[in-house]
Image (tube, rainbow over the protein chains, first blue to last red):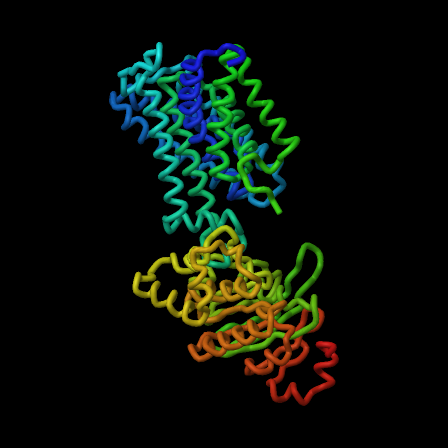
Amino acid sequence: MSVGIPLDQIAIQTVNGIVNGMILALVASGLTLIFGIMDVVNFAHGDLVMLGGFTGASTLALTGNFWLALLVAALTIAVLGAALQASTLRPLLGRDPLTTILATFGMSLVLQKYAIWQWGPSARSLKEPITGQFTLFYLQYPWYRVATAVLAAAIIGGLYAFLKYGRYGIWIRATTQDRIMAQAMGIPVPIVHTVVFAIGASMAAASGVLFGPLGGVTQNMGADFTLRAFIVVVVGGMGNLGGSIMASIFISLLEAYASLVVSPAQAVIVSFMALILTLLFRPTGLFVPTPK
Amino acid sequence: MLALRDVHTYYGKSHILHGVTIDVGPGEVVGLLGRNGVGKSTTLKTICGLVRPAEGRVEFEGRNVAGWAPHKLPPLGIAYVPEDRRIFRLLTVLENLRTGLDRRGVTEARRQQLLEKVYHHFPVLRERRNQAGGTLSGGEQQMLAIARAMMLEPKIILLDEPTEGLMPRMVGQIREIIRVLHEERVAILLVEQNLPLTLEVSSRVYLMEKGIVRHQATPDELRQQHDVIRQYLGV
């Protein structure tokens, strides 16, 4: 290597990039699914990650079972997401995008204040359910990190299979493509919208719980997740599920490699550069076919 | 079965339908003719709930469905085939059909039966069942749009200009499927520019002008009324 970075460090950062990318993909696929079907950019998405993390932390403290905490958080936040969509976004459907952006921004603030009220300002950490490590070159690499990537991939794979083969998956894809015709075919579009928001919210909550042991849960962690997921969704092509997953891994790998050269805090800059370059040269997204 | 009574519809401030009154009996094929922009498509959209009428009644089997959410009408037996076909372009042909099949109360046997029926009438859809809808030709998309509506087992199909832009061979297939549906006692409200086809398949024809029905006749009567045809259709 011309800059003199040892190969083993590159390999380690590749693993890191993929692990971070899969957690991000879990957040971003919910965001892109919601955008694709109802043209709503959900600025409260990161706060659903945060609430999922807190719900998971509380459940874990109560039951001592991480996997149960994951399930409870995903289900609770799914119900919350459905309620938020039905009460706040459904009445705004078809309005100026600015209206829904402001509405989700307002939701974000409310959720953050709720978290402070409920859980206080201090961070919570979740104890990882898998404590073993394995040797990756000179590092002891935690199995839990690998497990999060696998689990995130499994959840996304489950979503994909549901969209592709499930009865209601067809409803979601049809509604995403043509809301009007979907209605004319008898598909209950308002309910489909609510369900999709609930699915996105529950995926966000799952990533909050999975991320808990790695980075802790704080009431202001949402903004960072929203921003990163938003970058990924734009780079991957708005509303494109496969593109968002590819972009999550792509951006996380870029950051991981950049942190070999600069500090991790500075490495974030490369994802913004990727965002700006995408908007300048390929605003439809990197991982979508060229529009005709 | 379907009865529109003095239906008024607006797009924003422009008044499109000025009191449309139309009847379609069970199993009846009724033509709706008129020049471009007289409100034929809007009439169909109003029936299937995509446009809300400001005034008037849309009665289906005795129930006033005016203002109902559009997704509640297909379960009653109303299917819509729009002028621009609106195929789900990224779904495969089979998935397009499934949007009409994946509903409550359809047994697996019934699903197969319905699929076999449309594959029988439109063999090209069987060949292309795993192909994305957007890759089909215009005529094939029209067949898919009609086949998709048939999946709903409707009592009435609202057909908006099914032969527009099609080759004569394809027009023949559309004529044939209208005949089959008629035999199966499915009512059809047919909006068309193709006068010979409409006169051939319909039992009654309405002529619209400026958002209102001006004239009603049987095809045989209309064939004699050259002045009426010239006045309302300009041909």
